Amino acid sequence: MIEIKDVTKRYGETVVLDGVSLTIAPGGVTSVIGANGAGKSTLLSVVSRLVPADGGTVTVDGMDVATTPGDRLARRLAVLRQDNHLSVRLTVRELVAFGRFPHSGGRLTAADRDLVEEAIDYFELGDLADRHLDQLSGGQRQRAHVAMVLCQDTDYVLLDEPLNNLDMRHSVQMMRRLRRMADDYGKTVVMVVHDVNFASCHSDTIVAMKDGSVVAQGTTAEMMTPEVLNAVYDLDIDVHEIGGHRIGVYFS
Amino acid sequence: MLAVLTLLAVAAVAGFCLIGLAGNWEYALGLRARKIATMIVVGTAVACSSVLFQTVTGNRVLTPGVMGFDQLFVLIQTLIVFLFGALALSSADPRLLFAGQVAAMVLFAGALYRRLFGHGGRDLYVLVLAGVVFGTLFGSLSSLASRLINPNDFVVLQDSLFASFNQVDPDLLALSALLVAAAAAWTARLAPRLDVVALGRDHALNLGVHHARVVNRVLVVVAVLVSVSTALVGPVTFLGLLVASLARQLTGTFRHGTVLPAAALLAVTVLVGGQLVLERMFTMDTALSVIINFVGGVYFIALLIRESRR
Image (cartoon, rainbow over all chains, first blue to last red; front, side, top):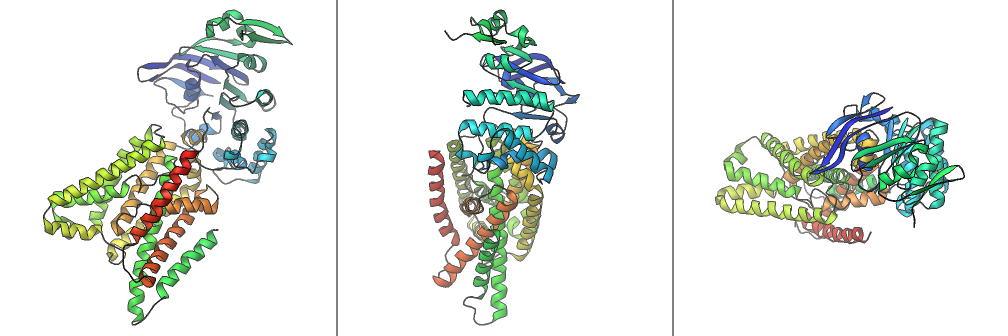
């Protein structure tokens, strides 16, 4: 369970997170939605200890992320941010293998290698495994990074816009795979998603943020209503039920 | 690839020892052996400091030399003479003096460069510019201070700053060798974590590596290594850039376990081979650093142009 209590974060005068309290139950897929600048990415960064909070606490299964040793946390929680530019030149396989670092400390065992190959296959990267990352498209790179996070084999997986750079087919596949990571492997997936309809079709819980605060949290059915979405985005959004999913229509 | 580089380095060392050997062998070999030892220590220090610096700054174009580290060491040395007189420099125990200089260097370099690289200061041009400005600033301050001291002090200072490979204090050399060996051993142990740090702060934290702690320690080690090489032979600004970059290209890997020894071997080969060509073939005893800085400088510009096209 991830427990966020009264978390505050400021950059200079700007308050990015304003006393956020939130509990994310273990298991399932949770999507964090909200307009640009609502504090979604910062919240994810604070939870994954990439950014220190100015106030409040975050605990993951009772471990305070600010004080728990990094290597211990790295075996329980993995995070992937949006911008993943690397200054080193790596092949896909080398990148994915880094996911085993918290477990093996850089010396891969046979079991580690099997997990690396499994993660590569899971994200259909077999043909690209020996290519360097700078020779790949943005979407392929994105998949390689998510494969690394999967390879880290943690209970909690935090992703900041995993659909970045992906085309429609790969977006859907990515969401299905994340869904399966939760269903098949029992992982807790928390992600920032821009497209409310992807959040609606693939997540169990939706958390809505606005101006540095959580304004609503609930099951997908509770959250995918015109009232909630209008309040979150300040935009008229119709919600229709299509093929068993609630779809927000806001394009025209 | 490491085997080939080792062979090259050994060949250069053997060539330097044996080519044109005449007269009293014992005397000549002893003289040459000391030069070789100096070049091995300096080469290793320069190569390791450059690779480490590039790793923690996440930058493949900058080295401590380019960022003015060695100029900072010269400045510290000059300030000691300026403040305490040449007597302090010549009468103090060279090892104690060296320890003091390294401590000052670690302190200043740590404060300065952590500030520069600490908060996502990733714009390459800003960093290059800062490096050039700092290098020039330190250089100008040194020359200002050296103009203000009396001529006798200046001679002593000059002597200690431009110690070439020919005249290195054996005590200082032994101490330096010890320091470099310790740094190399420490780095070897840390190599897997350095591989992770090279991925950048976020990835390193996610993989459970205490990024800030590793970076701070590496910067201290870099400061020590730069102090060693600069104290022994003066600034060789572009050697580090040259060998770090070549080592990465030749080995085709990012792993520090391979890149670090490759860079050190390359540095030894370049230094010893270059000195050999200078001394035996052109029979002119000019400074090797002039040629290294010329070749390295051209390479630096090429690298800068290539990086900016990306």
